[in-house]
Image (cartoon, rainbow, N blue to C red):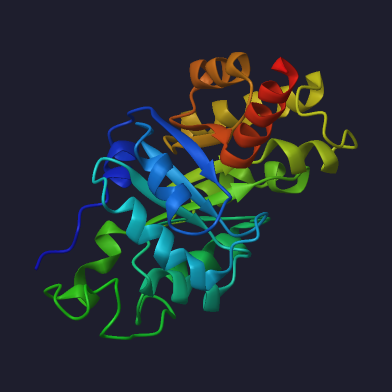
Length: 253
């Protein structure tokens, strides 16, 4: 059996826009349902959602039934143990939160790779290896793994060039909410100074040739940031969509 191709990574390399959706509701039904909606990628979130590491494999299995949808996983932290476990579950793309420096980016790269190029522990009979069926998995795994690092503070923005150009980093995701808080405007993601920082970051990444991404629930903002240069853009969160639909339905009665 051959190693599955990472379609998300290929699209990044080809500079193709990918529209994504945040999955914060655990279990197997919601990720499966979301995968039928036609989005290019779904992010399984374990940082700001009541989804534990053990639940990720179920989500990945549900999404895998729809081969044109790429699964991205956000671990709770940039932690080598979490990274190791999630990669063994078969995740091919990770979005690591709160990367503040080039050293933290290098640590993330190391956690994604087997020795002698990294510190990822080796295990043979895992979902990642298709339970030992993938030919030469340990030699070829790195080719299809994709590492996205998240910059979400003004400190990280000041280090964005060094972070983005770390060998092994495939893309940079900008976190508007935490960025707004670090700038003294908590929750004001549309504040002109926050928007200015985001635009500057997208421009810098575009000049560096590094793919950039963002999450925004505003259609106008999504269109704007895509026009600035983001190429993996998340436009919704399942829990928010459910809450809004429930409230709208109640308002009708």
